[in-house]
Length: 347
Image (cartoon, rainbow, N blue to C red; front, top):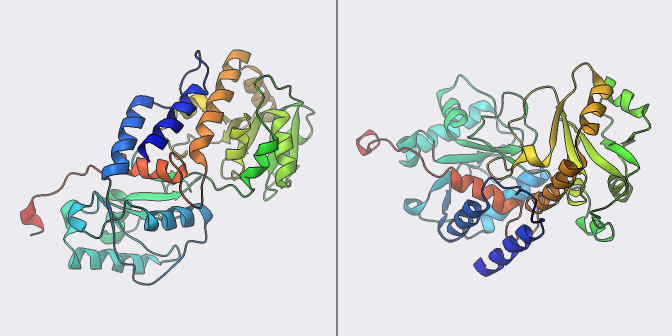
């Protein structure tokens, strides 16, 4: 496993040109820590009060992959982190009962008030007046699905799961990335059609932009290859982001506030991979100025980086080295250090 990971990592780095920057904050640190994680990271999973499934694909894949992984230990004494499993439709009252039972029946929660615990909640949880749920929200690591509802995500503590591709990645085989590709459109938007924002209407009327509503996978992938930038409305449809990046279409996330919940934010330098554009009033005109203002050299570099970064955003039924599952595990590994209270407080 270590040899395979090393080869894949070197291939990823070699795929970048000598003059390109890296998509990682620190490639060396990532590789060294990743190897340590594979060999030593251990997680203890509490027994859920009742069987449940996650209907959300990335949450389901993460949870099932973790259950089958060598990271799980049956010995809580050797665990770095503890997973609190509960159904996504658990009520606040029931969730409070779960934490109260952990507090009363096990010694591990009280050592850190939950700081070395984590939980999976696709939509995230809000703050609560109940002490138990409040400790879970404030202290434990929340794993949810990108993007998260405003106020439900705590930066530098919580983690988001990369979006799950709804189309077979095998479709990418016939659509290879061209470093010198010519494009027909400045920007492309595969729109979910759930809302009708003014910006979408403006983009529809501009010949430099291609806007399609819920296009079929092969069709939108072809549109992606014909466009320089791929547009994503924050809290809109983002499931095709991985394919877009893999095909060298630089992602542009259109937002109305700062984004702090992008996937793998501890690992990837999103500022060098994607453009985050606030378009409150000036609309399509402002967006066009930003996109046209990017130099060809900078654009070429961003294309390389987003292709390289996409390799870490792919979900597999059987986890592969450096894929989305392992990168989420790596973010948990980075959060494994927690200050524990004196033994007398829980002994």
